Every structure is written in structure tokens, then in C-alpha cells.
Image (cartoon, rainbow, N blue to C red; front, side, top):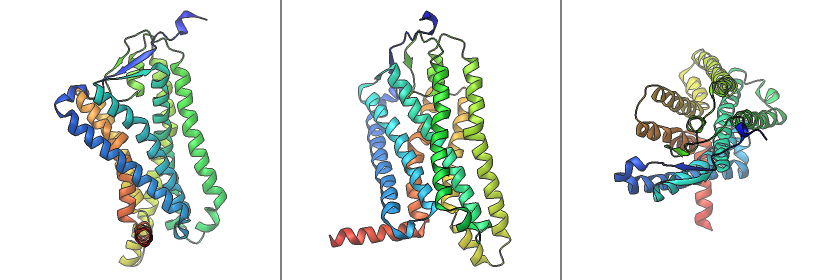
Amino acid sequence: MNEKNQTKVYEIFLLGFKDLHNIKIPLLILLLLTYCVTICGNVLIIVLVSYSKTLQSPMYFFLTQLSISDIMLTTDIVPTTLASMFHDKMVLSFSGCITQFYIFGCSESTECLILAVMAYDRYLAICHPLHYATIMDFDLFLKMSIISWIFGALIVIITILALFGLEFCGPNIIDHFFCDLTPILKLSCSETSKVEMEVFFLDIFVLILPFIMTVTSYGWIIKTILGLSSNLQRRKAFSTCSSHLTVVCIFYGTLIAIYMISTRGVSLTINKVASLLYTVVTPMLNPIIYSLRNKDIKENIRKLQTHLRCV
């Protein structure tokens, strides 16, 4: 085997939030509580949609896929982060680090695609209500969901195959709380520009195109809503997509903020704290937003509470 392609870094040291030592305990408790709320909230959404007859529609099916993606993301990131905070660092094998990046990339890529599919679903429901049931049948929304997961996974696999073509000979320290692509590339002593260009090209398919599809769908939705004859019709139509629109704004808003922060040369501490937004905070907010702004979800939560009290 060519020595140049051999991986010489066998362990990765994640420093996590070592530079925030003074607030380590409060931050650790906050992250643990956030993780518990995230898991409970997203599991609740999945259970409600799975067992409630009033939530058997494509929109809520896509919502369960979003919840699964959020559970994957937060479970991939938070336990390692908590361990690194507790021990001041976290040791991962190189393969473990790559695995963490794979799950992170897969969940983020799939979430971009699922959000775009949900925007298209709302576009059909509001702009073409008479044809919605015919177009968005079971076969279509099931295929769209499966394709989103497969495509999201394949994109990250291509990136990982490119990483294995690099030589990693040290250092083996990542000053971050999880194995993201940029910190991993900094460990390589090979030329990484080709991999970076490849990743940029792949991002077009999992980030730029879904974003354009989402914005276009909501452009037509807003145009249709403004063209309705009464305020009651406008409010009713907007209520069917307000939760999803809020989630989209938070998701893409945090990604854009992270990109801007990463390109301004700010401190690593600010970068790490900002990264918590889309890896920890957003997965927690998604089920809360849908629970507070969706009357069907709220009604089923009340039914579940009543049932539990009776038991």
C-alpha cells in the first residue's frame, strides 16, 4: 500500500469548550437539559403523528422525518460535547471522528432536503388545493422522503471517500466540540483544495438548490395568499405554513450566521458558541415551534394528557 495514503493519525483529541472553563458547569447543565428537551419533544412529535388519525397527512409525515433527523444530529453531537466538557477533552479514534462527521453531515443534508420537500408540499396545498390529494399521494411523499435520506447520505459518503484520499500525519488536536469538515481538513498534511472544491460543488445539491426550491415555493405561496379575497382566508392559509416557515428561517438563518462568522476571522470561542445554534438549539426549537403554532398538534397533546391522567 502507498505510504502516502496511509492514515497516521489514529486518535483525535476534541478540546470542546476548554476555553470556557469558568462557566463549564452551568454550560454542561444547560446542554444536558437542552438535549433532554430535544429528545422528548421530537419523540413526542413522532409518537403523535404515528398514532393519531387526525395527523395522517404528508405534512405531518415529513415532520416526523425532520424529527428523526434532529434526534440523529443532537445525539451525534451532544454526548461527545458533554464528555469533553466533563473531562476537559474528549479522545476519539480517527474512524470515530469520521463517523461523527458522517452522521452530522447526513442529518444536516437530509434536513435541507426535507425542508425543501415540505415547502413544496405547502405550495401544492395552498396554490393547488383542488389537485393536492391527487398529486401528493402516498407513493409520491414516501418516495420523496426516501430519496431525501438516500441522497443526503450519498453526498456525505462521497465527501468521506475524498477524505480517505488525504494523508493525516498530525497534529491530532481539534479545537472544537465535534468533528466538522473544516477542523478535519486542518489535520491533513496533504493538499486539500481539491477536496474543498468537491465539497463546494456537492453543497450546491444539498444546500443551494433546496434553498432555491424553498424560497421559490414560498414566493408562490405568498403571492397566492395575498391574492385571496378575505383576511380570514389569508390567515387560514398562512396558518398552514407558518410553523414550517419559522423553522426554515431559523435553520437557514443559523447556517448563514455561522458562515459569516467563520469568514470574519473571529475567535474560536465565538465560532463554537455560534455552532451550538444549528447543532443543539435548532433541533430543540423545531418540535416546540410546531407544538405551539399548530392547532392539530396542540389538540393531540391535550388528548394525550387527558389519556395519561385517566390511566
